[in-house]
Length: 477
Image 1 (cartoon, rainbow, N blue to C red):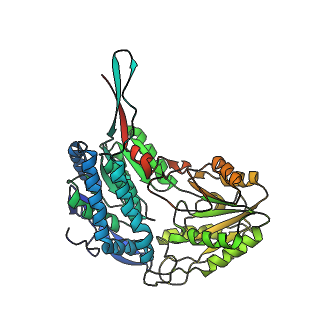
Image 2 (cartoon, helix red, strand yellow):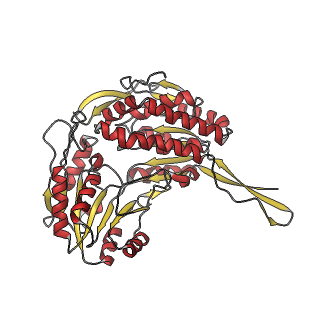
Image 3 (spheres, one colour):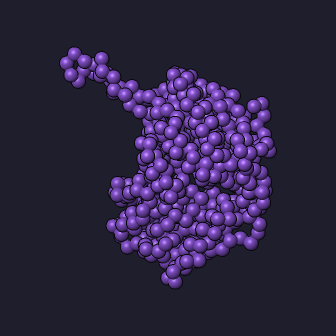
């Protein structure tokens, strides 16, 4: 494609070509900043997922035999092409999500490009044991090989970035893939497939758009040997059950409910300001967002006041408002979900600031702080996935860790303290896949991103993420 066109109708990408759904069925795409329909995408059915899986299976026969250097060059060319088509990708992503465009351009798009470049290099650095004789007269060698066709499902909060996190390691390892983007945000992923098509053989990367039934059709298809999903706990359970019927491998990155441990030795004002900027980024629609603030009782009132003041200064607005700090929630349903949690707050909880939807078209919600919550409260135990944080006091380190670990999720956490020993104790004791110390939310391609407990299993990013898309074969000579 000589020039990526974000205004073109969204299409599936199958066997190297853009196509509508075989049935002709479509679904509306709604701009969350206005509540108005701004486009359409295919509502793919079983015939579409079958065509995609068939194309991926045929392409695997050749792609799996390419050398790591050949795959590296393809991924590097895709990264360069993403840079060249940056404007179109920004327009596509912002149209579906309502994000501030410059935030996406400067903070998310560079991470997408870096993901492809990192895995391009990682493809040529697979680890393995040295050949050795473990029994007399025979030499053992380990081969690390691609799994096969991968079925991948991505969420609506970071459409293009999550597509990169899934596609890049799968292709780097020699697999082919069928990717289904979220039904509300398929545009940038479909555009990525068209951009990548000039640098990949047909069928290596396929995209099928659709709804939950499309996802079910894809995960139940007999061809994929690995299912990789970023989504809700509900989706993870359903997909794991579907995979069990055919003994498919599963990679799940699910919900989060990140605790933030604020100890008494922090700079209250500086810490509150830094964390407020992170907590409300992307309207809080981030599985690693700092959500549950656990604050030492001697700093609790001061921190709540400082954080609420910082939150109150933030503005939410549509993409054409350059001073907006974050955009709308993804959908009317997501806004209703957030409002529902707030409407069911117990009497002991206090909304310190915010708490309401913004009175304008679209699905905007004010930055919200809820103090005085208790560990058993619904808003503490459940993932909010919106611009809302909770505040709880603790008396000592033991209680802080108990509260932090006292939910079903285990994706991310952060610890804020000047005491190095205390920080190291917390990094060991926290039951999460990621722990930040005196920072929160930063990801790098070289380090794994994944959780424990109901936050799933498997890793995105890093060499660990690449190895998740391989299988080991023992060869004895």
